[in-house]
Length: 499
Image 1 (cartoon, rainbow, N blue to C red):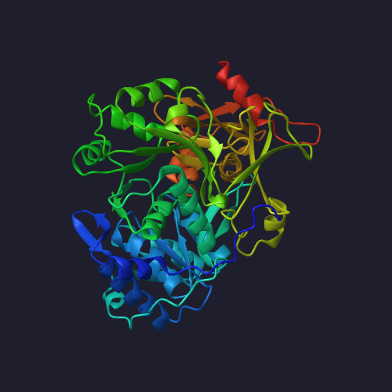
Image 2 (cartoon, helix red, strand yellow):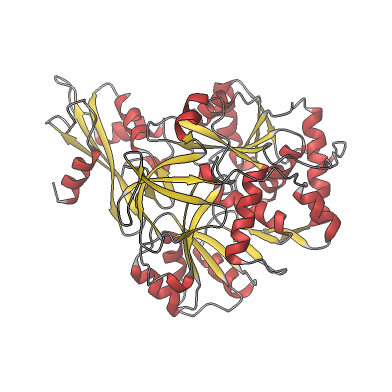
């Protein structure tokens, strides 16, 4: 198997750092500071309380929480208890969350106070228990000490990710996946004892979660912001000795709008995901003394696969960079390796590739073949081996750093009794990178529903970021292949052309 992980035992990251440098700051959030000794105590007691609640080994425990110390605590405590940490997207609707709870067969949903109503609604539909992350029981559980070792193949997290077929699947990320991802990132960025990695992206996404876990693996500090606020990020970069930052292009543009001043030399790396960055943004970053590193990754590869170094940012404009040390990348066209410059499907192998999908052996077998993860993304490599991503999973829309899958939105539209056909595409947007646009064909003999009625129908089924910014009504059938497959690219091209 290509890139098979080394079968070496791992240690519990928090317990190890609590032994080696207990007074070093592990987490900062909203003025509260936990050193590694404090984090270890909080993790151990919460793990004990989880076991007292009857949580079983390898059972997924769902967490619906905004960024903060509680979700960071349970990202370590749930695996310590032997269960699987399953963070849920706080921007989803109750129906979407209920589906993931049912699909995962979770029995317990933890939530923070701000999301209690959403959690209770989803839990009631799914038939699961809820408990608040602020509950006093988490501080009074019999402490669970870390075991002597952890097998790298043991699953740590379940993170739901949607495919172009619409229904999300739970990617199984192991302790080994996170370990080798951290190793690869360290080889690329280096690790310094005073590193402070700012997490202003959602911690329920793999990019945000990776910041928490890598910081624990390294024994460095993760600084958590409850939400992205450009003025606060700008101030943190200038005044709080932040050394590393992970954002998407639209977030960086908003930070640049706060001030024209250059950034301090303490900022040694900004990982920029979510697709290729525009040239003016990279030029502005260079003018501001900001070292930007464009990246390509996905949930199933435990975040980063390739990263473009700061020195190559303009020379290789549009590239996602070279594969990291633990990842092997192939471009495949009709079952063969592509030539340099030839577009094909991006395949990834190595110890960061996930263990598959929860309860989905068929989907796992289709996605991971002979150790190669078939990403569904199209791209090419140049003659120097630099990776370029042509399209994110065919018709995937990346809006404001969030993935919107057209098939999921189309499915929700088709639940409306007046709609016969639907096509959802992304169109360029200066603020969000892409905006979601829906084209629908009504059933014959049906009165045209008001746009507000369709929008209300969708709001009951979808997260806000997935809602179309425009809903266009057509009279002609949507373009399809001879086999009946919807040709979204023709819809998108027509809309980009003005009609």
